[in-house]
Amino acid sequence: DAKTTQPNSMESNEEEPVHLPCNHSTISGTDYIHWYRQLPSQGPEYVIHGLTSNVNNRMASLAIAEDRKSSTLILHRATLRDAAVYYCILREQGAQKLVFGQGTRLTINP
Amino acid sequence: ETGVTQTPRHLVMGMTNKKSLKCEQHLGHNAMYWYKQSAKKPLELMFVYNFKEQTENNSVPSRFSPECPNSSHLFLHLHTLQPEDSALYLCASSQYNSGGTYNEQFFGPGTRLTVL
Image (cartoon, rainbow over all chains, first blue to last red; front, side, top):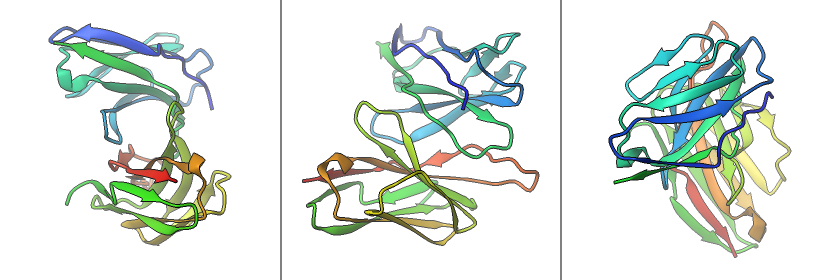
């Protein structure tokens, strides 16, 4: 499985945008970039995924570099409820498994 | 009930006990998973079931025994566990599409297991 690298932790303020980076320099052409997050005392939840183009949904935006060696999860206006561990995961097209890394622990200050 | 539910939420057991964890998904999915999340370690995939058939065992010790009686229910039977098996055990489900792709996984809240 191609590997991803994320900062261990990040901190931001409520109502400000948050940019969570992920490096995946060994990504293959058929790897999708998935983001999940795990709120305290809960299981992970799906956030967003993409292949090449930037993606938007109600939770977040995903910006993918042109060479696909990095991506950024964007929370446009962070709330206290967004404090969680965010996981960036590569999953090959058609593959079933998710391989979780350590993720980034995001702290939101009031 | 909606989504993925797990019972019990907390479990304390001795090394000689036998207990079972239960997972139920109310999403109509055809794939289910068991994960283990130990302190300071990433989530580890333990077992995968597709259409009630086990398709992956990630070198899990035999003291963990999964059972999938139907597509909505998944059990993890525990016996003769060790203290290092203390962890959060998470169940997940997803949908396999006829086009050969899997949708996102939906996770339950987990069972916090402590082995004394």
